[in-house]
Amino acid sequence: MQKLIAGLHHFQTQIFLSHKELFERLVKGQNPDALFITCSDSRINPNLITQTNPGDLFILRNAGNIIPPYGAANGGEGATIEFAVVALGVKDIIVCGHSHCGAMNGLLHPEVLTDLPAVAAWLSHAAATRRIVKENYINLDEKQLLNITIQENVLVQLENLKTHPAVAACLSRGQLNLHGWTYKIETGEVFSYQPGEGQFLALTELPPATQRRRPRLATASSI
Image (cartoon, rainbow, N blue to C red; front, side):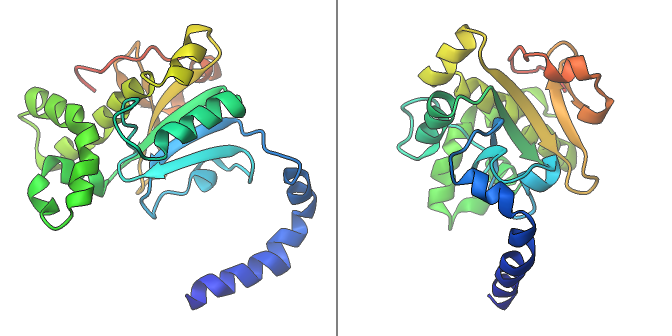
């Protein structure tokens, strides 16, 4: 706790004062650029990765960056998504998985979740991910299997996202873009799913026009 308290002191005496105008502007309301859905993993910092300021991202975090299909769960995910799309009018939603994801490892190895029944129940919303991986990637080694699971889960959750009425309505009007990303902790690289290529490609290697293009969502048979 001492580290956190020291951090708060530094924020209030140094950081806040140097950004006082920004925070005064944020008091009047928020107008985020995107809804950023990612894992609760402490190693992931959406604002650091994207170099954004307070007010730029509306962030939803949970174990495994999972989005239950509409009506399948009573958690806050559906309400957060609806508020972001309808009330805040975000134009982009990003689902971002990450390397070394413990939730995805648990999805592959449910035996490690014996003492974590709530986690096991939550991961049932990624059952499609497990099945896709088990039936299509049987020859991969453990490390490759985890990486593929992380990627496939992003695509599955994007499909689940489309079952939410607010999202479906905006997509039908062309007012919303969906993006599937994966973040590699050890290199800082971010990869974006490109439907035309059927794989995740480094965002820094994509031309600007490609980065802005609305993705066509479909589960990849190979990545």
